[in-house]
Length: 89
Image 1 (cartoon, helix red, strand yellow):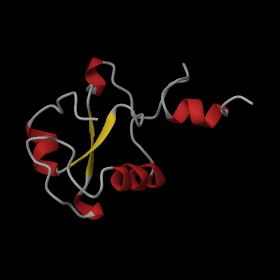
Image 2 (image 1 turned 90 degrees about the vertical axis):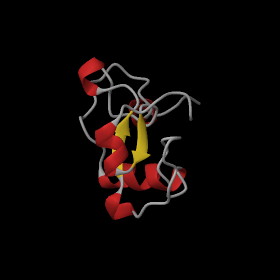
Image 3 (image 1 turned 180 degrees about the vertical axis):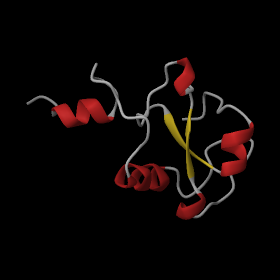
Image 4 (image 1 turned 45 degrees about the vertical axis):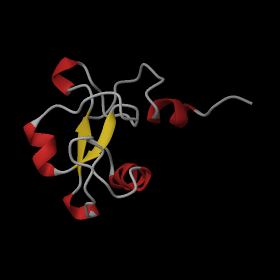
């Protein structure tokens, strides 16, 4: 039994163009998987869901897509100030 098409798209394993942002349910999943913390190693503070922003490991201007593999939970200050560094996933 193979994976579903929606599963492939969600994780970025499909050639279909992705949306520029995540939906509310995807943000909730990302927030829960991050244990309610900023995922940048320089920050790692606890944040509320309302103040969470979705950061991209690879910027959209460099070809990064809004997939779970490329998205991280970040605070506004961290997301605007510096690029999100690999490897902390």
